[in-house]
Image (cartoon, rainbow, N blue to C red):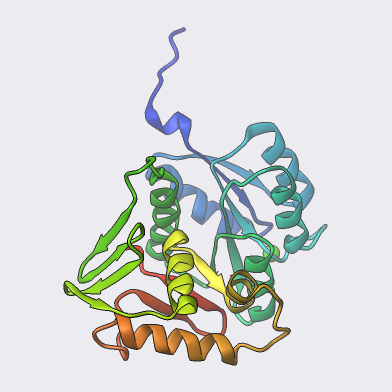
Length: 237
Ligand code: CA
């Protein structure tokens, strides 16, 4: 019998979620988008399916019956860079931040609208599709913001703005992770090289200064978006 091949065969999503209602709901929507979907109801089953099938994206519930979802992220990161989208219950703020710190790519809180979930999945896919071509990325240009990496110049509406070295590194870090949520801890570790143990004030001050320089309206940021209580995300579009 002839096997029908289509593009959807190439993209597999693994859902690790013990709530059958939620996993079926996610599965149906992802299948409608043309993805191949695998379901696991426990951490161990999920890790087994992960290592045997190499999915392109994992949707991971943090509250699993056999193991903490945070451990699952650690185990996946031990063997792969495949994106992990955490699906957490409302009120699990600490777990959410911990998940991002351990290498999850994004999170969504239950209850969520399917449109929101699919949008997050598309953002991750776009980021994976953006393979940096050598030499092609010497200038970032989007809307009214231009960053010339070679000349270390930042322009807003064509007018150069002067950033301090730390502000410039912050901007580069955000740009390198476009669309991805970066936690306060992650940013401070990357920029200052130490873990601030809860000191998020420093990062807020520097981010506010950077925003005043590159955003036209700091009350409605166009580029550097706040993820309340978690960190920041550079706008994907
Ligand atoms: Ca659960």
